[in-house]
Image 1 (spheres, rainbow, N blue to C red):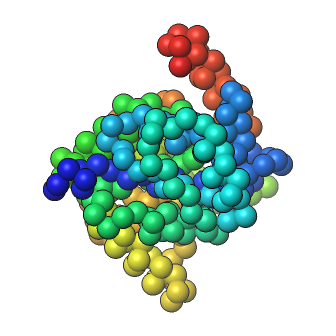
Image 2: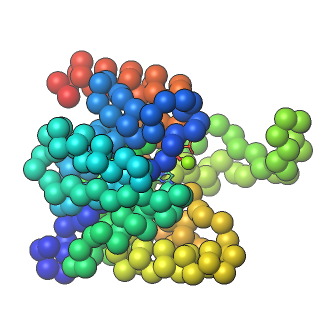
Length: 249
Ligand code: CTP
Ligand code: MG
């Protein structure tokens, strides 16, 4: 691997509406400490020496707005590009991946909705790919016990079973991949969907698993949580305030 190939590129899917967060701007453009979630997320990636390029998949009707936002915030001199995202997260990642130069061999995929991921997690994921893993996910143990149910919203749902919590992990991003692996599984998924195949997955490692690849877990971080519901924004504001108070963030 030459020097350019050893530097990772990151794809940031940011084209979602944020339905679960409630009415308002697209989630990636909602503010945390006066700065859009997307800008926090891109900065978190740009802070890593392992990352040389960030490609943002913006809402299709918001590309110019996102370019303007990123221009107006300092991003450590990193190369940041913006493409139009798609109708699903999976499609947004595929479109972002297509904008990464051919010589880049390591790709990270990071949700715009995880604005506070510590740089140590970004570094650890990139390092694990550099060390030879084809797919790496950061994850944390679960606090809650998890039950599998027969889904039946609005009514009491029958419990099927209780997986052993010690074997479960809650998965975060950035997820890291050999670029060839990620491109191959996204291409296969596209072919499958065209044939009326399986539904989109909720993370990229899930695609690698679907096609028989090997995925490994490295430690994630509690501050890499995803802003999904309104309470998550309250928590994110508190984490940011604590950082600003303690480490002149
Ligand atoms: N995403 C995307 N393109 C889509 C859908 C989602 O790029 N068509 C991105 C989101 O912007 C987010 C990440 O994928 O950064 C994780 O998705 P999620 O948390 O589900 O965000 P949303 O889809 O925006 O939220 P919701 O599901 O509540 O509508
Ligand atoms: Mg979603």
